[in-house]
Structures are given as C-alpha cells and as structure tokens.
Length: 237
Image (cartoon, rainbow, N blue to C red; front, side, top):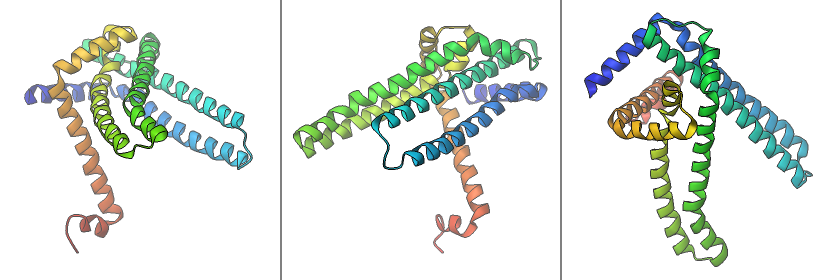
C-alpha cells in the first residue's frame, strides 16, 4: 500500500511538473478564500458597527441573509475551481498535456454537481448536530436536569465527532469522483463513499501526512518568529 501511494504521489508530481498550469485553479482557490475571509470580516465590522446597540431584529436577519448569500457564492466559485482542477488533472493523466482553456470547460461541466453535493454535506453537518446535541440542550433548558443533560451532550458529542470524521473521509474525494465520472451529486456521494470505504487506509495516510506537515510548518514558523518560546514548549528553560 505504501509503495502504491508513493507511486501515485510521484506520478502526480511528474504530471504537475510537465503541466504547471494545473496549479492555477488551486492558486485561485487559495486567493479566493483569503479575499472572501477578509471581505466577510470587513463587511461584518462595518455593518454590525453601524447597527451598534440600536439594531432591530430585521437588521440582523438581513445581515444573516447577506452572509449566507456570500457563503453560497463562495461555495459555487470553489466548486467551479475544484471541478476545473480535477478535470484538468484527469486530462493530464490521459493525454499528458493540458492548457488553461480547459479550466472553463471542466469547471462548467461539473461545478453544479459539486456545489449541490457540498450543500448536502453542509446540511448533513447541521442536521446531525441538531439531532445529536439538541436533546441535551433541550433537557437542560426545559427541565434543568444538569447531570442528565451533560450525559446526553457527552454521548451526542462523541457520536457527532465520529460522524463528522466519517463525513470528511467521504467528502474529501467527492469533487474528484464527480469530475472523473461526470456524475450527479447523489450518485457522486455514493461513489465517493464506496471509494473512501475501499481506500480508507490510503486516505488515513494522506490525512496523517497532511496534518503532520501542518504541525511541522507551524513549528518551524514558530521557531523563526519566537525561537525561545517555541523551544520552551519541549525543553524546560
């Protein structure tokens, strides 16, 4: 399994070196995420600052609607770029060469399916949270039974976290699965589940490598910015 994963990563890197344009959709995703985050923060600060303590409920409803609309636009843009990225990668594997014009072609072809599947993913996260955490909150709010409420919350939280981990495993390959097979949202989720179930060890290895890389990167950045504080976390000074 390790050797097969190594071969996959090696081939992927070789394809990227031969087709640097493959990085354009991902780069646009990163830039779009950063810009969206800062726009949301700036808009929230200005809008909520204008309301101050005199805002009516309708003002906050309008704010919530605008934030949801912004999130939907961001998810649609991200779905388009994900479809473009995986579609171009598929073409690179098949023919060995891609161009920037293919970004629009593959993005338009599968963006709606990925967008719809992403919305289903978000609804699953929200609804499962309400179902699993709601009873404990309800018991505490209505009956003031703290011990029972805490027990229900603890059990619900454990099940909820386990469910979220499973969702992440299923959702991670979803854009690639939809793009590779030109599938709809529901069919894509089924195929993604089958793929995650079949390749759970490989996915776990990739997740571990990813979070390990993040930890090492944060450690290096921390040592560069404040070496004594970072070293003191491991070596008592």
